[in-house]
Image 1 (cartoon, rainbow, N blue to C red):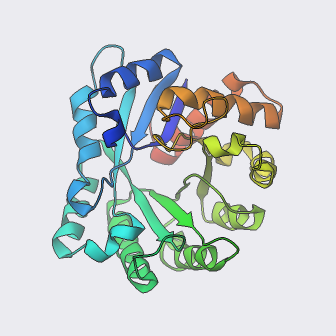
Image 2: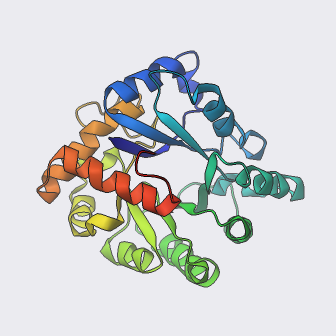
Length: 273
Protein backbone atom coordinates (compact mmCIF):
# COMPACT_ATOMS: atom_id res chain seq x y z
CA UNK A 1 0.00 0.00 0.00
CA UNK A 2 1.19 3.50 -0.89
CA UNK A 3 0.50 6.65 1.09
CA UNK A 4 0.33 9.99 -0.67
CA UNK A 5 1.84 12.25 1.96
CA UNK A 6 0.80 15.52 0.30
CA UNK A 7 -2.19 16.20 -1.97
CA UNK A 8 -4.36 19.30 -2.39
CA UNK A 9 -7.68 17.52 -2.64
CA UNK A 10 -9.59 20.77 -2.14
CA UNK A 11 -8.29 22.14 -5.45
CA UNK A 12 -10.95 23.51 -7.78
CA UNK A 13 -9.40 21.30 -10.47
CA UNK A 14 -11.15 18.32 -8.85
CA UNK A 15 -14.55 19.98 -8.63
CA UNK A 16 -17.28 17.44 -9.27
CA UNK A 17 -14.73 14.63 -9.73
CA UNK A 18 -13.22 14.08 -6.31
CA UNK A 19 -15.06 10.86 -5.56
CA UNK A 20 -13.84 9.34 -8.84
CA UNK A 21 -10.30 10.63 -8.16
CA UNK A 22 -10.26 8.93 -4.78
CA UNK A 23 -11.62 5.65 -6.16
CA UNK A 24 -8.86 5.63 -8.79
CA UNK A 25 -6.33 6.20 -6.03
CA UNK A 26 -7.40 3.11 -4.12
CA UNK A 27 -7.53 1.07 -7.32
CA UNK A 28 -3.90 2.12 -7.97
CA UNK A 29 -2.79 0.91 -4.56
CA UNK A 30 -2.89 4.22 -2.69
CA UNK A 31 -4.37 3.28 0.66
CA UNK A 32 -4.19 6.67 2.36
CA UNK A 33 -3.85 10.34 1.45
CA UNK A 34 -2.86 13.33 3.56
CA UNK A 35 -5.10 16.16 2.34
CA UNK A 36 -3.41 19.53 2.71
CA UNK A 37 -5.48 22.18 4.44
CA UNK A 38 -4.25 25.56 3.23
CA UNK A 39 -6.92 26.33 0.63
CA UNK A 40 -6.61 29.71 -1.03
CA UNK A 41 -6.05 31.44 2.29
CA UNK A 42 -6.62 31.20 6.05
CA UNK A 43 -10.40 31.21 5.69
CA UNK A 44 -10.23 27.90 3.79
CA UNK A 45 -8.00 25.89 6.14
CA UNK A 46 -10.93 23.68 7.12
CA UNK A 47 -11.66 22.35 3.64
CA UNK A 48 -9.29 19.36 3.91
CA UNK A 49 -10.92 18.28 7.17
CA UNK A 50 -14.35 18.57 5.58
CA UNK A 51 -13.22 16.33 2.71
CA UNK A 52 -11.99 13.75 5.22
CA UNK A 53 -15.33 13.71 6.96
CA UNK A 54 -17.20 13.52 3.69
CA UNK A 55 -15.40 10.46 2.32
CA UNK A 56 -13.86 8.52 5.22
CA UNK A 57 -15.68 5.26 5.80
CA UNK A 58 -17.12 5.10 2.29
CA UNK A 59 -16.50 1.82 0.42
CA UNK A 60 -13.80 1.91 -2.23
CA UNK A 61 -12.06 4.97 -0.80
CA UNK A 62 -8.57 5.42 0.65
CA UNK A 63 -8.20 6.52 4.26
CA UNK A 64 -7.98 10.31 4.41
CA UNK A 65 -6.10 12.48 6.89
CA UNK A 66 -5.92 16.26 6.95
CA UNK A 67 -3.50 19.03 7.74
CA UNK A 68 -4.15 22.68 8.46
CA UNK A 69 -1.87 25.65 8.02
CA UNK A 70 -1.28 29.07 6.55
CA UNK A 71 0.77 29.07 3.35
CA UNK A 72 3.76 31.44 3.27
CA UNK A 73 2.15 33.78 0.74
CA UNK A 74 -0.99 34.07 2.85
CA UNK A 75 0.71 34.92 6.14
CA UNK A 76 0.16 38.65 5.55
CA UNK A 77 -3.59 37.93 5.55
CA UNK A 78 -3.55 36.12 8.88
CA UNK A 79 -4.85 37.73 12.06
CA UNK A 80 -5.32 36.48 15.60
CA UNK A 81 -8.64 34.85 14.70
CA UNK A 82 -6.91 32.83 11.99
CA UNK A 83 -4.20 31.58 14.34
CA UNK A 84 -6.91 30.64 16.83
CA UNK A 85 -8.75 28.78 14.08
CA UNK A 86 -5.57 26.92 13.21
CA UNK A 87 -5.09 25.92 16.83
CA UNK A 88 -8.64 24.58 16.99
CA UNK A 89 -8.24 22.62 13.77
CA UNK A 90 -5.05 20.98 15.02
CA UNK A 91 -7.10 19.67 17.91
CA UNK A 92 -9.37 17.68 15.59
CA UNK A 93 -8.50 13.96 15.43
CA UNK A 94 -8.30 13.80 11.63
CA UNK A 95 -5.88 16.75 11.47
CA UNK A 96 -2.55 15.06 12.02
CA UNK A 97 -0.17 17.78 10.78
CA UNK A 98 0.34 21.53 10.56
CA UNK A 99 1.10 22.69 7.07
CA UNK A 100 2.19 23.35 4.62
CA UNK A 101 4.06 26.18 6.29
CA UNK A 102 7.47 27.72 5.76
CA UNK A 103 9.07 30.25 3.45
CA UNK A 104 8.82 31.08 -0.24
CA UNK A 105 11.22 33.60 -1.74
CA UNK A 106 10.50 32.61 -5.34
CA UNK A 107 7.28 34.56 -5.77
CA UNK A 108 6.78 38.23 -5.03
CA UNK A 109 3.97 39.68 -2.97
CA UNK A 110 4.57 38.53 0.60
CA UNK A 111 7.27 40.30 2.67
CA UNK A 112 9.90 37.89 3.93
CA UNK A 113 9.77 39.22 7.48
CA UNK A 114 6.01 38.63 7.58
CA UNK A 115 6.51 35.09 6.28
CA UNK A 116 9.11 34.41 8.97
CA UNK A 117 6.84 35.75 11.72
CA UNK A 118 3.93 33.62 10.51
CA UNK A 119 6.17 30.57 10.26
CA UNK A 120 7.38 30.95 13.84
CA UNK A 121 3.86 31.54 15.13
CA UNK A 122 2.58 28.39 13.47
CA UNK A 123 5.48 26.33 14.81
CA UNK A 124 4.53 27.50 18.30
CA UNK A 125 0.91 26.46 17.77
CA UNK A 126 1.89 23.09 16.30
CA UNK A 127 4.33 22.42 19.13
CA UNK A 128 1.64 23.05 21.72
CA UNK A 129 -0.62 20.56 19.91
CA UNK A 130 2.26 18.09 19.34
CA UNK A 131 1.58 17.97 15.61
CA UNK A 132 4.38 17.39 13.05
CA UNK A 133 4.87 20.17 10.53
CA UNK A 134 4.93 20.08 6.71
CA UNK A 135 7.59 22.40 5.32
CA UNK A 136 7.38 24.45 2.14
CA UNK A 137 10.70 25.94 1.06
CA UNK A 138 11.07 27.50 -2.37
CA UNK A 139 14.10 29.70 -3.03
CA UNK A 140 14.61 32.14 -5.83
CA UNK A 141 16.76 30.58 -8.55
CA UNK A 142 20.43 30.73 -7.61
CA UNK A 143 19.73 32.16 -4.14
CA UNK A 144 20.32 30.03 -1.05
CA UNK A 145 18.76 32.51 1.41
CA UNK A 146 15.40 30.74 1.62
CA UNK A 147 16.99 27.44 2.59
CA UNK A 148 19.29 29.08 5.11
CA UNK A 149 16.44 30.99 6.72
CA UNK A 150 14.15 27.95 6.77
CA UNK A 151 16.71 25.63 8.32
CA UNK A 152 17.87 28.24 10.83
CA UNK A 153 14.32 28.90 12.00
CA UNK A 154 13.66 25.17 12.28
CA UNK A 155 16.83 24.68 14.31
CA UNK A 156 15.88 27.46 16.71
CA UNK A 157 12.12 27.02 17.03
CA UNK A 158 11.33 23.41 16.10
CA UNK A 159 14.21 21.01 16.60
CA UNK A 160 14.06 21.31 20.42
CA UNK A 161 10.49 19.94 20.38
CA UNK A 162 11.60 16.58 19.00
CA UNK A 163 8.32 16.27 17.08
CA UNK A 164 9.73 16.17 13.55
CA UNK A 165 7.94 16.69 10.29
CA UNK A 166 8.26 16.49 6.51
CA UNK A 167 10.21 18.50 3.97
CA UNK A 168 7.49 18.40 1.33
CA UNK A 169 8.30 18.24 -2.39
CA UNK A 170 12.00 18.38 -1.60
CA UNK A 171 14.01 20.47 -4.07
CA UNK A 172 17.24 21.24 -2.21
CA UNK A 173 20.68 19.69 -2.21
CA UNK A 174 22.18 17.01 0.01
CA UNK A 175 23.39 19.44 2.68
CA UNK A 176 19.84 20.78 3.09
CA UNK A 177 18.43 17.26 3.38
CA UNK A 178 21.12 16.21 5.84
CA UNK A 179 20.56 19.20 8.12
CA UNK A 180 16.80 18.61 8.09
CA UNK A 181 17.11 14.91 8.83
CA UNK A 182 19.30 15.70 11.82
CA UNK A 183 16.26 17.58 13.18
CA UNK A 184 13.96 14.61 12.62
CA UNK A 185 12.46 15.58 9.26
CA UNK A 186 11.51 13.04 6.64
CA UNK A 187 12.32 13.93 3.03
CA UNK A 188 9.42 13.64 0.60
CA UNK A 189 9.82 13.43 -3.18
CA UNK A 190 7.14 14.33 -5.71
CA UNK A 191 6.69 13.70 -9.43
CA UNK A 192 9.34 16.22 -10.44
CA UNK A 193 11.99 13.70 -9.37
CA UNK A 194 11.12 11.85 -12.60
CA UNK A 195 11.77 14.83 -14.91
CA UNK A 196 14.73 14.63 -17.31
CA UNK A 197 16.52 17.69 -15.90
CA UNK A 198 16.11 16.59 -12.26
CA UNK A 199 19.31 14.53 -11.98
CA UNK A 200 20.62 16.57 -8.99
CA UNK A 201 17.36 15.78 -7.18
CA UNK A 202 17.66 12.09 -8.06
CA UNK A 203 21.20 12.12 -6.69
CA UNK A 204 19.79 13.27 -3.34
CA UNK A 205 16.97 10.72 -3.48
CA UNK A 206 19.48 7.89 -3.74
CA UNK A 207 21.35 9.07 -0.64
CA UNK A 208 18.40 9.58 1.73
CA UNK A 209 18.26 6.67 4.22
CA UNK A 210 15.30 4.38 3.66
CA UNK A 211 13.82 5.21 7.07
CA UNK A 212 13.75 8.95 6.28
CA UNK A 213 12.02 8.74 2.90
CA UNK A 214 8.46 9.61 1.81
CA UNK A 215 6.68 9.97 -1.50
CA UNK A 216 3.89 12.35 -2.52
CA UNK A 217 2.04 13.81 -5.48
CA UNK A 218 1.60 17.48 -4.51
CA UNK A 219 -1.51 16.96 -6.64
CA UNK A 220 -2.90 18.54 -8.72
CA UNK A 221 0.61 19.74 -9.57
CA UNK A 222 3.79 17.99 -10.80
CA UNK A 223 2.39 14.92 -12.51
CA UNK A 224 5.20 12.40 -12.96
CA UNK A 225 6.56 11.00 -16.19
CA UNK A 226 4.83 9.52 -18.22
CA UNK A 227 1.84 11.70 -17.27
CA UNK A 228 3.74 15.00 -17.10
CA UNK A 229 1.67 17.96 -18.20
CA UNK A 230 -1.63 16.44 -17.09
CA UNK A 231 -3.55 17.16 -13.91
CA UNK A 232 -1.89 15.16 -11.17
CA UNK A 233 -3.86 12.98 -8.76
CA UNK A 234 -2.99 10.44 -6.03
CA UNK A 235 -3.36 7.44 -8.38
CA UNK A 236 -0.34 8.64 -10.37
CA UNK A 237 1.94 8.36 -7.36
CA UNK A 238 2.66 4.76 -8.35
CA UNK A 239 4.86 6.14 -11.15
CA UNK A 240 6.91 8.22 -8.71
CA UNK A 241 7.29 5.35 -6.26
CA UNK A 242 8.39 3.01 -9.05
CA UNK A 243 10.94 5.57 -10.31
CA UNK A 244 12.36 6.03 -6.81
CA UNK A 245 12.51 2.28 -6.37
CA UNK A 246 14.42 1.88 -9.61
CA UNK A 247 16.90 4.56 -8.54
CA UNK A 248 17.45 2.84 -5.22
CA UNK A 249 17.50 -0.71 -6.57
CA UNK A 250 14.27 -1.89 -4.96
CA UNK A 251 10.82 -2.71 -6.26
CA UNK A 252 7.87 -0.35 -6.20
CA UNK A 253 6.28 -2.66 -3.64
CA UNK A 254 9.30 -2.30 -1.36
CA UNK A 255 9.17 1.47 -1.75
CA UNK A 256 5.50 1.40 -0.78
CA UNK A 257 6.23 -0.70 2.31
CA UNK A 258 9.11 1.48 3.51
CA UNK A 259 7.41 4.83 2.97
CA UNK A 260 4.17 3.63 4.55
CA UNK A 261 6.06 2.55 7.66
CA UNK A 262 7.84 5.91 7.78
CA UNK A 263 4.55 7.81 7.53
CA UNK A 264 2.99 5.70 10.24
CA UNK A 265 5.98 6.17 12.54
CA UNK A 266 5.99 9.95 12.16
CA UNK A 267 2.27 10.30 12.81
CA UNK A 268 2.08 7.42 15.30
CA UNK A 269 -0.47 5.52 13.21
CA UNK A 270 -1.21 1.81 13.35
CA UNK A 271 0.36 -0.41 10.70
CA UNK A 272 -2.93 -0.82 8.84
CA UNK A 273 -3.47 2.97 8.80
